[in-house]
Image (cartoon, rainbow, N blue to C red; front, top):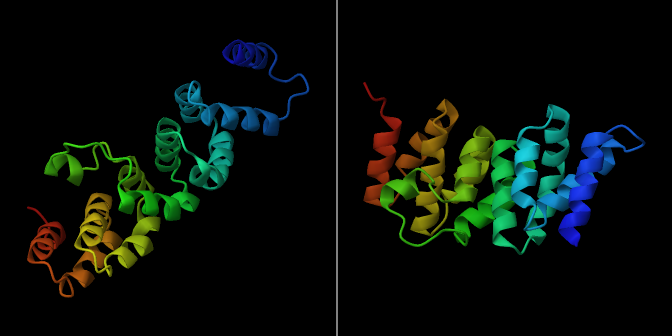
Length: 191
């Protein structure tokens, strides 16, 4: 029943998009679809194909949606959108999810972990790019080796000059020899 009503509403929007329906109502409907497990995937595709104004509006709303989400498939879609839309406002939440690693499947190889394969929060942080640097810089000061390794992975995948500068600055204060080695490899230009 719910799906049928939603299908009718979508059909009405497509057939008569300008009959007294405001953009805010369209965004609200799209967000409702994003937050529903049955329609979340389709909503992501619609947002990805949407106008810059639509993407901007969704990006502004994402930070308030993500912390309350309990369904992992919906949360993964919201995280994917945060990366695709470079939603800077989502960075604090993404860092929390990334550090906890709650959404990671078991059995990832080192290469898959390095390239953020199947790590939606890590991948989104890489997509957002340089705005994540202050958060990763803070993670580099963690007493937990795993947190520092995660920050190094994000910065190494961002690959910007600013990200490389942070890694170079951190290198001498890094206590773990393997992480020092990784930083050396990342920070040394390859010929």
